[in-house]
Image (cartoon, rainbow, N blue to C red):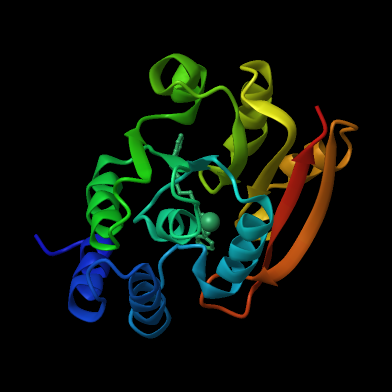
Length: 214
Ligand SMILES: O=C(NCCCCCn1ccc2cnccc21)c1cc(-c2ccc(F)cc2)cc(O)c1O
Ligand SMILES: [Mg+2]
């Protein structure tokens, strides 16, 4: 049996990036996925929007739903302040194995906790298992039909506080229409759409930033 796309992505990082240098890891993945084979990382265009929102929020505790190979985990963790932490949830063990290696190659393993499992099961355990009071920032990039139920779950578990920023990938492609409906028509959120394009393509996509008002 041959290698998988995530395995080939890891090889490209090990070949083209410098150990301990997050920027070179990001560039190696973007170059590989733009020129060799497409993969569902948030990518460089939407990545710039992610960077700017992160710099504005400067979260102490961040949550990512949907690690995949760790590209956005590296993008997020590299911008966190010294004592800040990222918890990232990945459902697929094969993806998690690769993501751990890419996050470690970037030298960010001390800032990132990768947890394997389903968001619906893990979110209610966040407080007790990880001592989380609430999240300052949530990046939604997992199953698009889980964006709404998991946002409601985060609310119900008291994991959002006044000012928490939710940033959702793929609200146009593949699309998360129910999520857009939910956050845009909900008085408890202040939402804004950031137009961009689907990673490594000219197809329209974008990020929705929603501030929880408490
Ligand atoms: O499907 C996408 N991502 C989700 C992958 C599976 C997540 C599973 N998962 C992870 C954590 C977790 C926790 N609980 C439950 C489930 C969980 C995705 C797809 C596209 C895309 C694909 C084809 C195309 F033609 C155009 C666009 C682009 C993206 O940027 C994407 O993000
Ligand atoms: Mg995505």
